[in-house]
Image (spheres, rainbow, N blue to C red):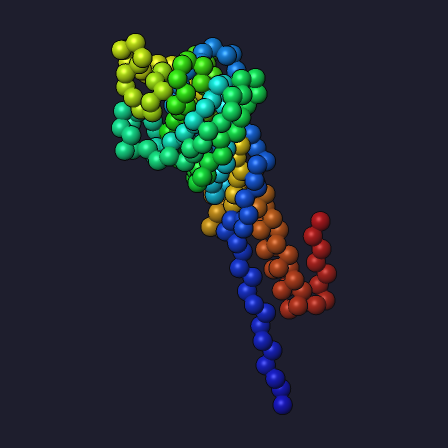
Length: 238
């Protein structure tokens, strides 16, 4: 009695990697040591041109006298939110020893995850009294840092040891515009894996190569089918 053969299972391609490439990338900003004070607020934007599901920022590095350090994030941007503490979520709070010459990591919990095209406002603040807690720059360009995955934009410095306090120690506004973050971001990336659904997120050259490969596969398949029908015909592809 003839037994039916069970067809092989259909291979289902994963849509994204089941791992994040951790700590493989750093974003170092320029450091002119223009100023020091209590805080810096800026935006981070995830770029779109690489096939990633998200970038994940695990730590922000700064230098200065430090002290009790906090990191807050706000959806999309810090703009119009720097006077609204309720719009922010704290993701780091700890006391750090002074680190004037070398960058010191502020580990984030939870980490910051940004999908391509997404942006987030970041606020790094020290509760230390005085004007030497955190080093930052004057704004030197339209972008503080830019790499393959993300860009850091200029923002505002804060001159109060009380987070979000709108008044400086001398009674004026505590916010200084046109300032830049000085430091480093440690981040990883979760890459997309190619399948038909993700095809559009890959670079143009890669998409063209996939199209050509699929065309060659189709031609070979059709030639093989024709040879089975007409075995006396010798078909070769060069």
